[in-house]
Length: 260
Image (cartoon, rainbow, N blue to C red; front, side):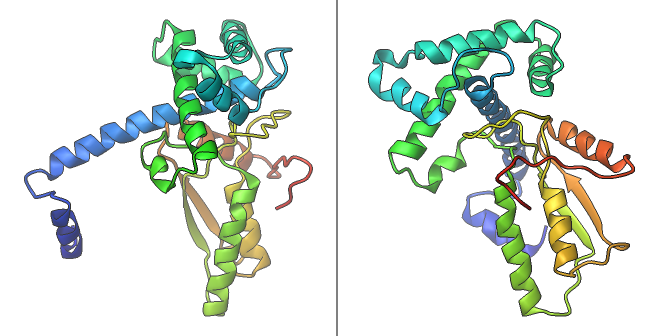
């Protein structure tokens, strides 16, 4: 590693002898946070989707407030618990919905017997975090311990567009024909405003390609975008992108009201 990084790590109490243990602990922490992040997405899907139940949708932030403030011992509100039960029941049936199929496979691959209990634990963790974020004006430090979110939304790409415009103005001759996206994301279930009328979509590769071409930062025949992902679901993300790559025409479905 570069000498500059040696000094940074030393200031954090990490030496040559303790570095292997530090890396191992970091990997364990990452795996735990990825799993916690998956649980959050499952809960947001359970509260908002009507693909598996006729019960009214529940706004996650509202459910978080009821869970923390209005109920003793933080028991799960009845309306939320009913939706969690309906989702678990749907997992036992053959479903064509890709999100339900993914959740079912997630628990099957881990040989989880008490699926309802696992999702209820995820609900408790997700609501506690959401309450801290929405109602207690918590600072950015709460994101340092929460589950890793591997979701994505169209709006998030506006910051990338702005950054590319800034780079272009700083260096008009700049060309970015090769791009690496670490964590392109798949819009499984956002914290609010879930739209699951169609299968999950991955927006960032398309949005970046669109920005590079419109800003003339890349040449169409030379542009190359590659993607990596930390999550096991990253396999699903990359598989989704590969499936589009094999098609004669690349396609992306965007909900009305949003534009790239």
